[in-house]
Length: 268
Image (cartoon, rainbow, N blue to C red; front, side, top):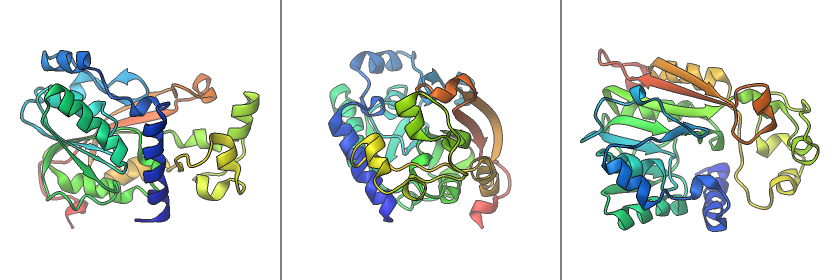
């Protein structure tokens, strides 16, 4: 485990314990009951539900990997809708939120702790769908994420991925937080760990908060294509809690398909 992954594992554990991060709050029993009755939705970017046609017509019996998706939100909903769900996350405390919902509401759901770049816990072609909400900004390099997602999907399987618009990282976070202004400061790609002054990250966000990274669209979209995926859907949405929302999309989402034909580059 590299230093950034180790830092972010501890940081997300603290996010859960602090209770102030909306992405660590498990869904309630009413949401699970509605999903069992066929009324369900999950979010991939921001707060808008994923388009229903991005999912297979029926979830019942499908093997779904919720990748870097702990927190007791998407995984339990998909399990209640009938899928065989495995939640994979870098934070044990985030996974505990999924386990809490499963125990509370009688769901069958597996959890696995690990780095999103390394899915060797799973055999090739283990899943029908990989659900990967906005989380690869916490990962230093993402080409292995796409290659591993391709490997663990069955032919014809789907990858639903959300990620940040890298352009939002050009702005000075201090000016945004303290003055409500957008000031261009950073070249891209950006990393908290290298592009801020010593101690600046802690002064801005508090001690021990997660470290973020921008990734180019070549790494995000081109990386999926290089892994062997075919991109079949694309959406964008303003960031739900950022000054940039008035000017540009903050989030992008892709629906990508592992082709059902001959093996792609990820298979060697």
